[in-house]
Amino acid sequence: MLSIDLSTLSSAFLLGLMGSAHCLGMCGGLASALGLHSRPSPLLITTDLNPPDAIDLNQSPFVRLFSYNLGRILSYCIAGIVVGSLGFWLSKQLGSSQILRYLAATMLILMGLYLGQWFNGIAFTEKVGSVLWRFIQPLGKRFMPVRSVKDALLVGMVWGWLPCGLVYSALIWASAEASLLGSALIMLCFGLGTLPSMLATGYFAQQLAHVIQNKAFRASSGLLMISFGIWSLPIIQSSLYKALS
Image 1 (cartoon, rainbow, N blue to C red):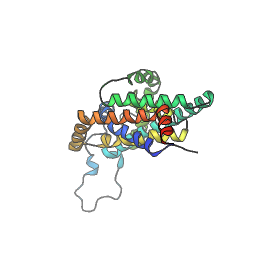
Image 2 (image 1 turned 90 degrees about the vertical axis):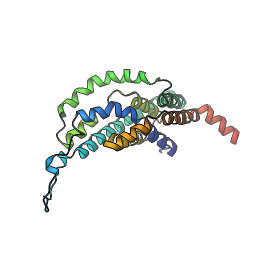
Image 3 (image 1 turned 60 degrees about the vertical axis):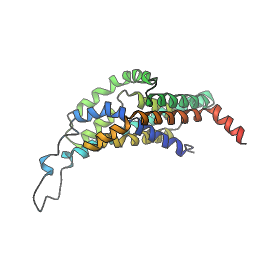
Image 4 (image 1 turned 180 degrees about the horizontal axis):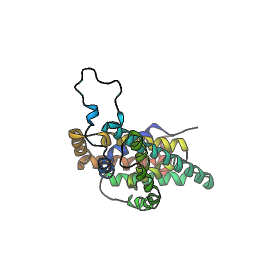
């Protein structure tokens, strides 16, 4: 039975939202390079009082951008299933999930330190992910440049595996759920948290980036994540349970 709680899913969403400044740096430029932020096609601009019934969605930059991000989030969910199965296997081998829970809490604290820009301890995950990325990256070249919604979706599914310390750290955290569905849900919520920044364009994108990159916002976000990480430590939860019982 799935035992994941709402606070964990909310934290995953907040992590994606608060860490989306990093996503803008890594994936925002990529989306532009792939032509996902190009101007609307003339096919969508008409002064005809009776426009055609069918509109070619493949020519809509927003639809392609949304499809790209949908593919990216799908790849997060697939990765969540993989690490969830690995976590389940490890918990069975160890006879307990305590070690995984300590690992998850540690990753939350490290991600909080990263968000606050105090310590980039999650950088090691990018080095590990770069090994896998060498095998996956060539797949995306088959669908570039992006000319259709399908291409955008498939490119997103490939580039979702881009070596990103924040994403890979979230995967390590998700693996502690030791559940295929639980880990996938964490990565889904994490991915949804990154959507506002990745879909934003123009003036709104500039304002959102300004808020996310604000030192006070990053510091409060980091402290919130660190607090949740400390609270997630089994020894802390055990002590609180004893104190309240």
